Image (cartoon, rainbow over all chains, first blue to last red; front, side, top):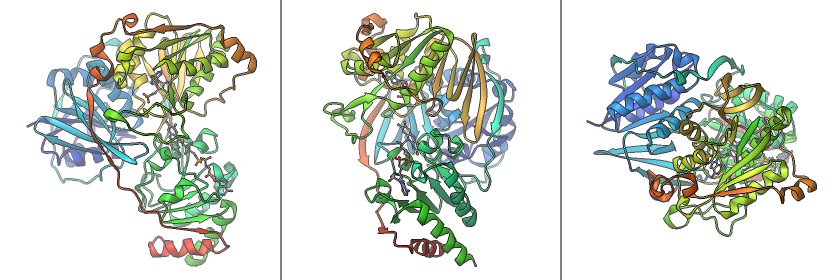
Length: 321
Length: 258
Ligand SMILES: Cc1cc2nc3c(=O)[nH]c(=O)nc-3n(C[C@H](O)[C@H](O)[C@H](O)COP(=O)(O)OP(=O)(O)OC[C@H]3O[C@@H](n4cnc5c(N)ncnc54)[C@H](O)[C@@H]3O)c2cc1C
Ligand SMILES: Nc1ncnc2c1ncn2[C@@H]1O[C@H](COP(=O)(O)O)[C@@H](O)[C@H]1O
């Protein structure tokens, strides 16, 4: 049976949601699913098994957490070169991308980025990659040596436990050259954000440049608070320093699929909509009736955010009593 | 400090991208501009060079037209340029592009090679880490802050919930995000001065690469077909007449959010 490896990503000590999403899909492909867990996350092999891996290649050495990216590149390249799985799947996340690109370059392998679907026929892998702001989908196939390298867009698949038992854990310890530890991780800073996590919230209230300035995000915080949701931002907003990067929704930011997405003063550029068009319901407020965001909104309000958002807050408060 | 910056010529973001023969991006008849993401790279490079008494060389791979992006960087203040151009490079995937850029810069003795995190049209951010891997040097990605102290490079790299601080020794590849600086506009003096600056033209032979390693021939990922994605239906768009708050609240009640 063909083998597909899934890189296990560490999200503050837990297996990252993106990894669980990828495992949930991989186990439906009729292949043997193998997790690759490097660093402290190697202790979470059981979780990786629960979501579909039958085996886990585990290496708990701390070097993977103390140094940036390259130890994982060296380890995965060495393991993959010897064992030649059909493919290695990585999260389309900051960490997954950095590792995947270098493994592909090291071994001269074909790589597809940000796939949203994949299928296996015999020894052939096919992936779907949205292009042009997800207005079109390209089907891609691979030539050249195995493994094929793929990163997966977050939220492309639902994370569902398979109720799988403990996987067979194989302790591995590939030789790491000295050059693997040239980039030191000095510290990790978490920008505390109140309320639910952006990626998990059922309501997301996003502000764009049309909010006019950072001070006006207070009303979006208030609205999100009333709805039990999270506040998001466009890249224009985070680049301007109004809000932290962790709040960015879109191609380079987070992918969200809430029940309700409210966009205030957001134009709807395709690099933004690619991260939110999977939302169940979209409500937008923009003073320009030609704004592209209206084309994908269930309810669009042509108006000034400074007037409309306070009105919504009042009406929501009235309903909540 | 010997600073190198990659700049890519991309379709104007205000135009609508189209696919042509062989599912390749149509680049004819479309206004091309320097990738906005690379403007931050050029600016960061210029600031570093000013601080450390060095100079900036810009590198671009593309058809003859890519010269415009190099000229723009030169008029912002870069010293010289390298244009990588060869018919055999057409259709290169990220790895092919990375091979060409790596070959063009490998003997230039740079301390830092600055790139955008991802290009407007490629948008996969694969080229910079692959250039670093091919050169066997570290890459520090998604930098929202960059500090240099002698040969020590420190960056704040974005993460999903904040940032991590990374440190490495030169030479390195760094990818920068928007927002770490305010790119300058070329001055008239800069534009005039750029005319006398040199741009070195290199082709495949000069790079010591073979046609099979780059271009269409070297691309390991093939596009088997392109289909339109299912589109959302637009709903109702109404002007605000003072009661839109209630309208939204009613919808939230229907959706059981309230
Ligand atoms: C490689 C790449 C990656 C990118 N990744 C992302 C990404 O991940 N996320 C992202 O968001 N963007 C991303 N972008 C940027 C994207 O192309 C847009 O520039 C950005 O989304 C625009 O943000 P905005 O809608 O806030 O600003 P603008 O486009 O400036 O829109 C502001 C809107 O507010 C409206 N407005 C102004 N005043 C008011 C008012 N008083 N009341 C109501 N409406 C008002 C205007 O009509 C306008 O439509 C990326 C770009 C590139 C090239
Ligand atoms: N053809 C090219 N010429 C010069 N630089 C490039 C080219 N392609 C990519 N780059 C650099 O790599 C960055 C990321 O591009 P990409 O990997 O295409 O998303 C860009 O912002 C550029 O700095």
